[in-house]
Image (cartoon, rainbow over the protein chains, first blue to last red):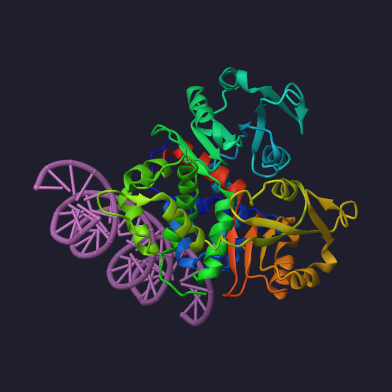
Length: 210
Length: 210
DNA sequence: TAGATTGTTAATCGATTAACAATC
DNA sequence: TAGATTGTTAATCGATTAACAATC
C-alpha cells in the first residue's frame, strides 16, 4: 500500500501505455520514443514523458524507452505479476458477456466467482466460473477473500448489494448500474455507464463540442 | 448544430442529471435543490448550479429546481424527443449483450442494424435487430442514414472497420476495442475500455489514491 | 417578512503542453 | 562529435469549489 503522489489522470493512462507496450513487445520492437508512443495512444508526447517521470519509468536520452524493460516495469506497477481474482455480481445479459470477456488474456485478471438469484443457473459452472446464490454472497466473498467486484445487478438493488459487498470486505467496485453508489471513503467505485457514454457521444455530436 | 461553450466536463454530467431527474419525476417529486441532487449523484452542489447555469436551466431562488420542467429541458438538450438509431458493428459476446441491453428504455436510443461476418447469424433477426453481412456495411449505413456506431469487433480489425464507418458517413463511434482509433477531426470517438477500467480500479486500490 | 436557495464571482486546484537544457 | 530524445520547468488551460449577494 504505497502512498504515492501520481496524479489520477496519469494513473488512468497507465493501463493504456501498458497495453500498447505489450503490442510493441510482441512485434519485436526494442525501443520506442514518446512521440511514436503518443501517436499510437493519442496522447501528447510531453504528457507521456511527464507521466513516465511520475511513474519513475526511466528512458534514455537520444534513444527513447526500452520496450521490454518498461513492459516489465508497468507489469509490476499494475501488480500484474500475480493473478487478481474478482467477483461478478449479477449474471444477466451483461454479466454473461463479461464472463466470456476474458479479462485475463494477458492481463492477469480473472472472474473467479459469480452470484445470482436465478435458480436456473445457481449451482452451475458458466464459462468455467461457478455461480453461487446471492444469499451466500457475503460468506463466499469472505472465504475466497475477494476484494474486487463487478456489479451488474438491476439498478433497484444496486445500493443494497453494494452495502453487502462492503460488509464482506470488498474495497473496489466496478459499477455497471446507473446508480451512483454511496460508499465509505476507503472503498473505491469505478462507474461504467454505457448508456451515459452513448448519450454523451450523441450530445457532443449534435452540439459540435470538439 | 448549435456552437455553444458548455465545458466538456459539464456536458458529460448532463446524462447523469437527466437520469436522476427521471427517477424524481417518476417518484412524483416537484422540486429538488442542488444540495439534494448533489447528494444523489455525488456531485458538489456548487458544481451542479454552475453546470445548470451553463446549460441555461433555470431554478427558483428559495425553492430549487422544477423537476418536470428540468426533465423536459434536458430531454431537449439531449435530443431525446426523437429516437436516435445506432448501428452495432460486431455481434460477438459483448455485441449480443448490447443488443439486449435496451438502451432505448426511457432513453430513446435504439440499435437498429447490426453487422457481422459470421454466416451463422447474418440474415437473421437477433433481439429484434437485423444482422447484415459486413460486406454490405457501408451501403446499409448509407441507406439507413446511421451516423452513430458501436464498435465491438476484434481489435485487429478495429481501425479498418472504423475507416469504413467514416467513409459511410458515421460521425460518432462508441469504441469498445482497446485500439485508440485514428479519425478525422469531425468524427468523435468515445472509448469504453472495460479491462482498462478494471485495471485502473485495482491500481488505485493497491496504491491508495483517493 | 424571514428563510431558503439560486446564480455568479473569484480563488484554488489539477492537468496539459510548449519549450529547452541536459545528456545519451 | 552530431543528432536525437529525454526529463523538467514554467506557462497555460480547464475544472472545481467556497463564498455570498441577489432574490424567490
